[in-house]
Length: 208
Image (tube, rainbow, N blue to C red; front, top):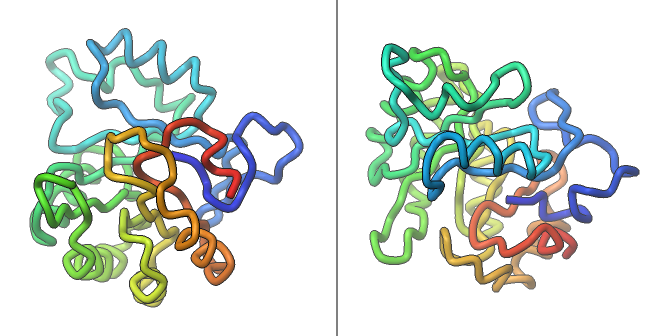
């Protein structure tokens, strides 16, 4: 994932990315799915140069008495961002976010509520509901959403700390397929960061 309104994360002259008052030098956010094992994940994350790393609450072993992906990610080096991947209702996403916080991961969360199993497009109504509830509970919420400016505004109105529209279907690697819509969002959303959250092919996709 890359911040949509900026140039690639390897530009050393960029201002830090600031989300909810927290600054990050890298504008690249990487996930932890699809790797062979924890060691391969560790090497890939290290090579990326990213500071923020997403961890799917429902897909990671939170029982630290057994080996877990979390054993390979140094929380002193990386900012771990729990996400609610695999959730299909607002209630499921809210429970996953609470579980991540109770397990000591973070009170930040990337909310993902999937509306269609085949395309993995977001259910924006459920995303808005989950965001509203979790913001009230003190979470810093970064919602994965569509590229709809109206939806983005509503998410900001209920307290979203960033807006994370897809650039193409999750995991497709197609690169940004909706440049016009993302440019509209970039121009009209100024109060919180705009982050391309899915379908990214390479870091240059962030240079809209």
